[in-house]
Amino acid sequence: MSNAAIRRIGVLTGGGDCPGLNAVIRAVTKTAIIEYGLEVLGIEDAYLGLLEDRVRPLGRNDVSNILTLGGTILGTTNKVNPMKYRTGTDADGHPIIADVSDRAAATCRKHGIDVLVCIGGDGTMAASYGMQRHGIPIVGVPKTIDNDLMCTDVTFGFTTAAQTATDALDRIHTTAMSHHRIMLVEIMGRNAGWLTLHAGLAAGADIILVPEIPYTVESIAQAYRRRAEQGKKFTIIAVSEGAAPREGEQIGEITDDPVEPLRLGGISEILARQVADKTGAETRATVLGHVQRGGTPCAYDRVLATHFGSAAMHLAAAGNWGRMVAMQEGRITSVPLEAVAGQQRLIPANHPLLAVARHTGVSFGDEEA
Ligand code: F6P
Image (tube, rainbow, N blue to C red):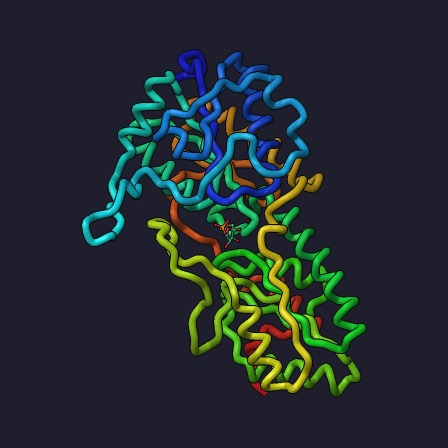
């Protein structure tokens, strides 16, 4: 389909919210209207809105004054993938999971949506890739505070979240110093340690624990003792929610979410007790939680989100569907959806920041004495 053949686009936000979503919605909508003269429909609550036919027009006034606003004016959910949708429970109380993509595609057709712009993480890209195979043209925009999407150097929302976590670590620093304590700060990121690594480095954390590098409590205790020998009376540990010991598992709760049942969380409390037992030091844990996802995007994320949104609209108008916009080596480009769908980008063992951290005395809890 050429530019001239498109009349109407749909836009949805999927997965966990993150700073910059509204900036993307605004950029997509404005570019569609100003540059291409298209109509825009907003889908409420991600794919749920397509399943429940909750769709509303977006005009220029609807996206006024939302550039700086956190969250998403369209609403979101991270539990709905039309290909794995919970339709009810069977006689034994087990969830019935069905592929209802046809229903979502039918809503698109009913509203004359020619292209669907999907703003989300790997789960949303997987669902969107499925929709594309059901004949709905898709353009993706990479969102997540976790920064764990394949084929893009950065996702919008990450930089804001890293700053929020850094601010929190800075505050923990002063109270740790006053009380001569070991302070653990639990940081989001799922199975990827990007957020913890960046915030930990930015705030000068002494120990950084990420999912990609299994730790031992003994190694953490040794790092604490080395600091104590140098006269340092406190230690800051930035720990990813997905970090796990060398011989052990991630900590979390199994939920009824058919797409991602393990909800990570709780490692800092457990580890705080173990570290206190090993070192005899007074230890406290702080879980930053959803504070990291809320609030206004920083300047970098506002610009990135606007750039991504506008670029997505250009792809949509040019008939370049089945692709996600991406940032590679400082340039905006696009990559096939299938290269991103359901994949997670973890910190590679040779990432330069890991070496930088080690060279500046950071422990990853994996060093042997
Ligand atoms: O993917 C973003 C994220 O904030 C993760 O870092 C975290 O594990 C998860 O979402 C939390 O999800 P929920 O909002 O469902 O608690």
